[in-house]
Amino acid sequence: MGRTRKVMKVELIGEGGDLIKLAAALRSMEYFGNIGASRDISLFIDGDGAGQVKVVFPDFDEELPVPAEAKEAADTGKGIRYMIGD
Image 1 (cartoon, rainbow, N blue to C red):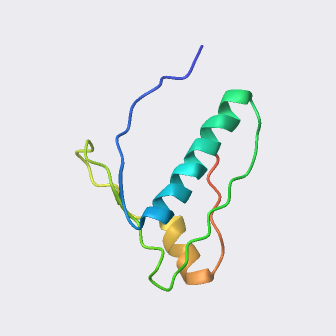
Image 2: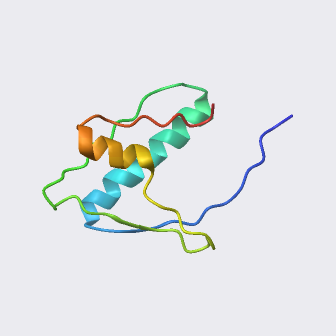
């Protein structure tokens, strides 16, 4: 039995180069999924204010808050790992 597929519209607002890098990471995720390769993709977010990307989910009725693990990572300096497709 297959997984149910849905569509999520996302708007990204930021510097052009940052958006291209983020799009490349998403395209890489798609590629690895298509070829059946399990791989890590790492994103480093520059916290000096230069790497600010606004993320908007226009079709969601409910608010999507900042995840607790992101708040913990900000406080502890640890990274976050999300497993996609498990």
